Image 1 (cartoon, rainbow, N blue to C red):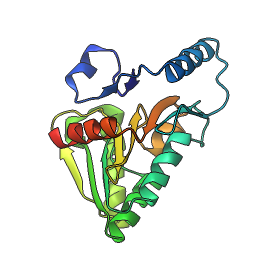
Image 2 (image 1 turned 60 degrees about the horizontal axis):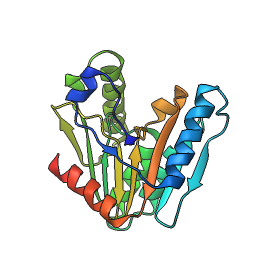
Image 3 (image 1 turned 120 degrees about the horizontal axis):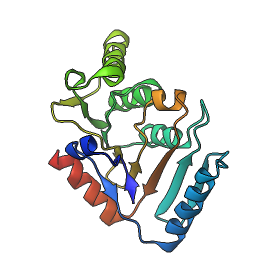
Image 4 (image 1 turned 60 degrees about the vertical axis):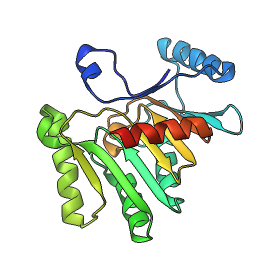
Length: 201
């Protein structure tokens, strides 16, 4: 399973998504990934191509490098018609700049995230800071702020390409050197299901 869920009671109250993967090649790669993490031997980010439709992306937690964030930014930069994203964090950094450029060139952008007012502690501070950054830099993009906690991390571009996993598409996680995993997919059924999930929110 790949997605945003953290396995504790509080997280199960949040809107989230997990993708079940049965393709043996990806399952085997994830199994080896766990073994390396358990032995503290995950030293490099990597991308594993399973087939024409699916790629596994892994961040080893090496500041300031993130193959997942790089991929998300590239997806938005190449968007022609639409960008739909969900994240626990308000967009910032390179991802925010890519969204802003997409809006300016006429791409229909939709971002769904948490209303900072419902968050506490550092999460509240981070999201308020990102909100202020958007206002001060006048990088206005269409953002829906939910009063229900959302923890899902999804990105769909042109209704053809999806990225789903544990990365919030935020520079903050990269700065904190967090390890992350994501699935990049062109699988039509998966893309359709992720779009339906976003629309249901």
